[in-house]
Length: 532
Image 1: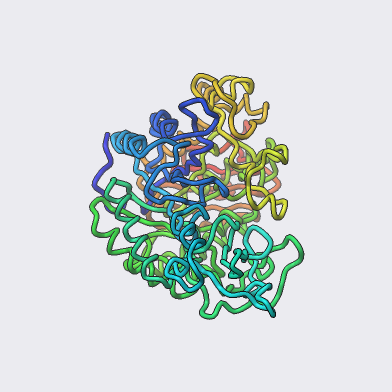
Image 2: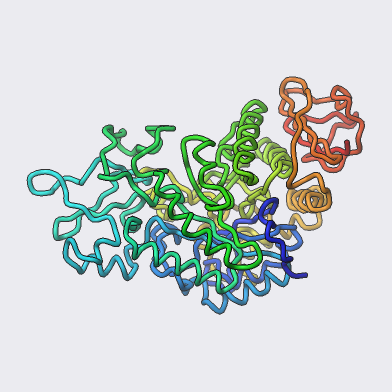
């Protein structure tokens, strides 16, 4: 099987996000790598995904898990080589799996050659113009240029020995690039072509809303409490460093590059913006193909919350003629098993939400390990946490980045390395022994086999993926809708079991997120697909 020449493949694709450091380790050093990904491609084909999105594997000191890139055109030795990437991609394409890579254009690593040259150059030099260097305030420039705060906590400015300050909306090791500089724009157009020429099928654009800052870099005018962040404090207000109109000029430069390559090369934006209307502006024939729908991920496990977000998302997507995306977990947020209550309750709700998500029009993004029902690891030793946000605010994303359990026992690192060698870079909970891929393989009711069944049906049923959604009348606490032709979806979030006869539904059950009662009633926190 090979990837098909379908330029619109992304419109209803199921994309599986891989955090390479935590997915699979082929050489036993405790760190996942590209050869590890390559070795698990048959597993991903059997799972039924259409594409994989690789979080950054580029040369990096890993000050922020690889989102601090020192060389955009090479692979970090901890993850392998460019040849390893090419081999992995060739095998993926042969199995019908497309490859999306992460592009990090808002900032580079402080170890990038450009930033090192900027530090060595004088204020006002061409080297410094590639970044956001500014003079400080105060009698001797001892105060930062404005009151902006880092997303990771603390101020967003660091002073260098000659007295100037540089902007970093994230960690100090991630200086923001100056996207008003033509040299920066030309560099990233070339980076796009470099990976497209190698054969990648798309890009996920990190901080797609952040590259352009408001002219004059005005202060916000308010400061948050110690350890807080302006982005949280201001809620839905648009900040002077996010979602500026100028970002759209960048994507209008990029779209012709993507369109010049065959096979439907695409780009999806990570854009945290104040409204669905603002998000829709990133999508269109002359900009990006998709934008992540984070509202769905952040929804309460509640029928009103889900329905409101689904309706708004579909309406805004229709305005620009592009499908929306659906996601429940990623490398930046607690796993949804834990968000929904953890334990058996959290897993039951997570499976119900997954079956809802996979029935919605558009494309779905899965996060590695969710098909195993993994929970957030909350009890990691502080000294092992590496998230720069943890060091500045106490908040950590390490718990969703714990290496995956493939088989065996905790003493073997759950076969994170096929031979059970090496110590995974973060410790795995002993209770994951029941959740390994190996342990779930032969259990027809396992979460792994539930995902396989859902993705197989999604491919087989013409009603799922693209198309329209029509809501049905339903009792309080229940969501019900039709996907034409011939599929009905019912989500029971009420505090009682639901007799499907209440909805006048008599179709056959195609798949349920959990066991039904003996009398056929749908338990609480359960989703079912039926024939119409």
